[in-house]
Image (tube, rainbow, N blue to C red):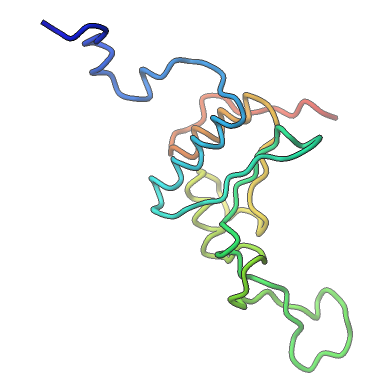
Length: 150
């Protein structure tokens, strides 16, 4: 006799197959992406939601303690042009992502190249959120988000 409420067929199905097809809200999406990335990489990733008019957008980045890449002026340069700087790991938190983290995050999300040094910005919208939940879990996205703005 099985316990009350246990569906034997459902309980034997793989997790992804028994997940109900429902739209996740922003906070559920953030939690799922963060959990999946940590499970797959063994590292903590910063997955945060936007504020104000960017409330629905989600950003994935290395945590501030691992964002130690800063633009440092090249030795002997007296001018102040963009090409006079190079990106270096200064060990000081609060900069941008290091090349290794950029490459790893790109690989974890199934992208063809490293992510931007400021991470990945996911637009607001359930299709975009579902796409990145699939990517974070190492699955090919069932549906990709399509821009809804011009």
